[in-house]
Length: 219
Image (cartoon, rainbow, N blue to C red; front, top):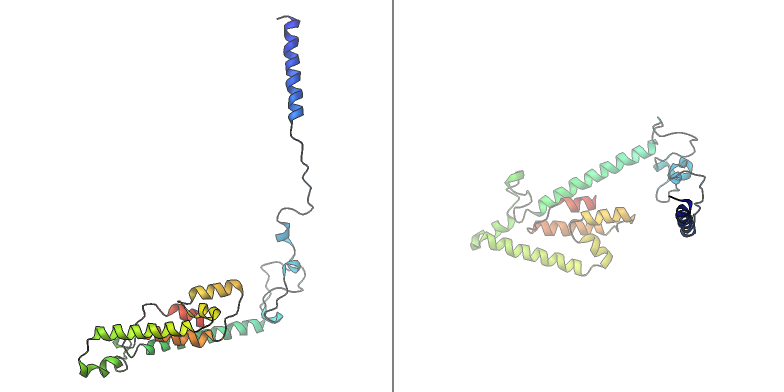
């Protein structure tokens, strides 16, 4: 190959390199950060602790003014916090037991919810059946009529409640408890007696739901 044949090829290569340079995208400079990625999550505990407004400071287990104390230390929890948690657990346990007993005795008119031979309460149960025994009314009809009356009573009470209170009272109670905890709201005090009364009426008249959800919400 002669030199004259190679010169056009070299010119073509130079032209392609020049075109590449002209069409090269501009370099974008990324500003450098002084802190590493995730630095916001690696700040000191003093900067991460937010002031609490819902409880006094001595009810909190967060570390305050402890210098460079790292996780895993041997710092004991405040005695006031431990006493508060123990007392709260005891109150919740009493509420759970009381709700469970109320649901049991609410079933005595029909002999359901454990107010029967299952818990040794056969004498206290079946009140409606014993009262209607002389009329020879089928037991199935008694359950149907009492169940309809119970649903009618519960629905009437819910219809006259305000919308925000109705949302807390209606249903099982588990979803309402989760929503309340996630949003940080406070349950109105009216929810406790209304939920207890409506749960006893519904379950005592043959409702098909369980007592776990109402117990969780009440406690």
